[in-house]
Length: 351
Ligand SMILES: *Cc1c(COP(=O)(O)O)cnc(C)c1O
Image 1 (spheres, helix red, strand yellow):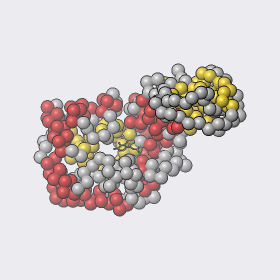
Image 2: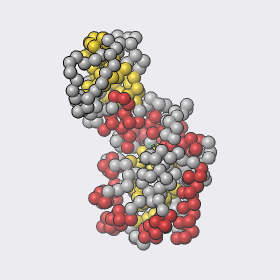
Image 3: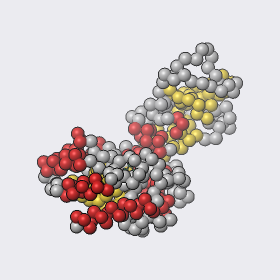
Image 4: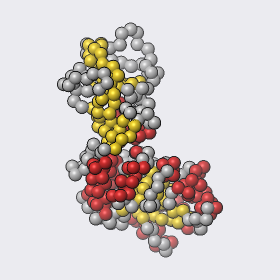
């Protein structure tokens, strides 16, 4: 079936082996993040086989179908309305709202279990987490009163909304909070989770403060790309995933539409550069599956637009010959892997 994603399992395993080892030798445990491939069970299995310490996902529905012996972590703050599922299908969830934590406590009590939480602290990136020190301490105090909740640790998330790059100084604030909480309440926090793939440059330079003992890693594992500066690591693979799409029309046509220009398929008025006649190929994949601007094509294949179910390529400069029925391959980015896995029209194959 086309379109299809082909996963090179050897390359994925090599990425996992390399990065898990880099983390473990520095005393950092790894949450393998499965959301970019929608919790695909074969890929989760490889993460488990290569030694991730946790499986983490932002959607509880992905964790619900995940069968693994390592603890499961819900990354996105729970919705109050899904509290019961969160307790049932994850061992640990990241939280910042006392109201939600209380509801998790209620559900955990009903289910006769204890749910672990990691309290998220906002160090300035301004997505999730508690920002004010007083609120952090008062929230901890309230959490400790809840019998069916265990405060498993604290964490932070950077380079997601605000683009804040993890630095030694920023992460030391997290260690300070850990020390304050442990001293004030006479407790031990098991886990201090310092961030995501954007922490990798700091960690590889051995500049990540001691005490950060966990990272939650997605992009670095699937693409070998750290997300602070966007660099690819030489010792990792950036082509674990390849997309193959089939050509359904090839014709020489003008580069500019003929007639008065109104709205396109998405209600926008398009504009065009006149390059004269070009060789246009249509691929049987569209906006519903992926944003064409996130596909990395071979030399000479220039993606110029899409509608819901079609991507149009200018293949005038392509050296080889493209015929109807041919299959064209693309390297992928984080965003395109995410949306292709989400599309039910895309097949997933393993080699
Ligand atoms: C997605 C996510 C991660 C993983 O991010 P990558 O950049 O893919 O490593 C980590 N933490 C949280 C809270 C997330 O939502």
